[in-house]
Structures are given as C-alpha cells and as structure tokens.
Length: 428
Image (tube, rainbow, N blue to C red; front, side):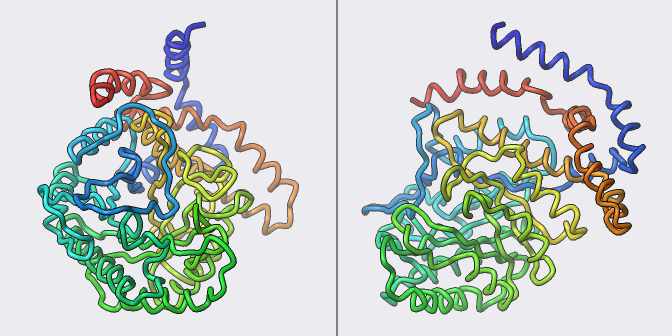
C-alpha cells in the first residue's frame, strides 16, 4: 500500500473512533474525560525557537565561536535564516499543535537592525518584534541567556571562567537577559528566564570545587536583584562535547543552589544518564523547591537533545507532575534540535507529544490506584496499572485535537509537506 493511501486510511479510521464510548469507559473508573481535556489544553507549553535554525541565531558579530557542546546534526533543506522565517515556520507548526502555547527565545536571536551588539549590551528593544509577535497571537514568552557560541566562550567556560573579566562579561549578559525578561513580563505576563552554561573540562579536572565556587559567586551576582514577574530557573547537564570529564553545573550543584537561593530548577530530560529518568526526581524536588521547569527532550545513547516522543520516559514525567497535585508550580517547555528531518515537523511531533503525555496522565485512574495501595492491595494496584494500556486513550486524544481545530492522526503530515514544497525548499 502506498504511503499516501495509508495516511488517508489511517485518518479515516481515527475519525471513526467513538469519544462517547471512551468517555463512558473512563467514567466507570472514576475519570472525567471532559476535565482531562480541558486541563490538558489549558496547560501552557513553551516552544523553543532554536529548532528552526539549528541553534545558529541571528547575531551580527565577528570572531570564532564555540558551540559549547551543542551540535545539530543533519542537512535537511529549509533551515530558517531570519527572524521572519522562524516566525513563519512556527506559525505553520502552531496550526497543528493543540492547546495553549508559549514561545521560548534565546538571546542569540536578537534583531539589531544589522548593527553589532555584544551580548552584555542587549536591550529589550532588540527583541521588540518577538514580543509584539507573541502579543498579537496571545502567546506568553520565555527567555534564555546564550552562554555559548561566542568568542568569550571559546575555552568552554563562562560564569566559571578563571579570568574575572570573562566571568564579569557573562554576569552582565545574564543580568541583561533578566531585564529583558522583565520587559517581556510587563507585556505578556510572567516570563521564565532559564540559565544554562556549558562550563566544564574535557579531561582530568584538577580543581572542580574551585570552578564551582566561581559559578556560585557568578550566579549570586546575576540573581542579586529581583526582577518583577521573572521566574528564574537554573539548568544542569551531565556532560557535553568537549566537557566529557566534568560539568561544573551538575544536577547536584543546581539542585542545592535552587533550594538554598529560592529560585527554580530546570529538569532537562536530555541532560541525564540514559538509564536515569527524572520522574522520581520531580516528586522529591517539589517538596523542597518551586517552581520546576521541565525541558521535554529525549536523550539517546548519551547526553543529548532529540525530538520529544510520547514514550515511557515522557509519560512517567507527566504522571509524576499530575500525581503531585502541584501542577501550578511546574512549567513545561521543549528543547531539542534535529537537522536531519523537517524542522517544522520536529516541532509538531515534539509539542503534540508533550500535550499527549499531559492528557495521558490526566486520564489515569489514579484515585483507584491510590486507594488500592493504601489498602495494601498490591494486586489491584498492579492490575490497574496494566489496564491503562487497554483504555481508549486515542479516542480522547482525537477529540482533544478536534476541539482544538488541529489535524488528527497523521493528517498534519500533508500540511507539513505542502509547506516544505511551497516555502522551505525555496530557501536552498
């Protein structure tokens, strides 16, 4: 069977699913599908801009740069080259993604009118077009310092650099980014400003605690002044290209930093060991610090950022957040970059997967499982866990998409293909 025929057949089959029957089946287990749909759609998910252009940015400056361990592999046609192209690409993707959206911007996407503006001199005016664009579409906006791909990051060290002049540059950059976040917040509501730095050593680190002292001091300088409506978070990483021996900003460092300084903590799903799932960390961390930022990503083999999928890891994290009863303290965002596939499709797949995982967690017969556990009935609890795979989840997901007026099944793929042929191919 040809692929196009298969897609049409699949779409027809999906449309025939009965939401009414699914609603009744879930209700028998005490689950309100209407409430689940409403909550899943209302949960904001922040889409990262850097998927559109392979983390290249829009800066105008000279000098060798360093990726800081970032690498978007592949040469699929259609990479966005301007802010207008990024915005057009995401608007196309957004038409296929159900639910409340935000947009997540890195400082390297400043639009300076062709002028060279270094990162410690960035101002809200350099992001005015982005802010206006988000406001026009009713989207919130989040922001990130860009502590990589810059001559002053060429040593693989920024906020933990042994040279004070370089540390101070990055401190000024992060402070500027928090001020930009404040300007965003005045227009669009609370803005999450997430700090990640690539700092580390390639081999045989001699004074790791010394580097961590420097990072601690720099972060304290960055966060010294409170910026209204800015939600500050810090993000760890396991390791990266060129920093295989040690990472200054490890999970333990930032967990303790956030808990002691009263800022938020980011869990990036691609920044941990391949056998390590952050779901268990979520319920532990929420008891001691808030807020949490989830970067929905996917590690493969090693510390990396692959397109998010509706897999066991993502479902487990969504389960942990929903079960906690503290969803108001958790922010969701995506973070991946793949240049081997259609970049618009990567957004669609990744963001739909996050929304799907939220719905999956909200449809869990959790109350029954908790009741069985408290009664000491492990048999019933395990049986309920297995039952989830038999429930008509797909019918509820299709209903969510229908109400959000976005394509169901694989119908969105045809729209991506049309956009590729009409717009993306012409860029190359």
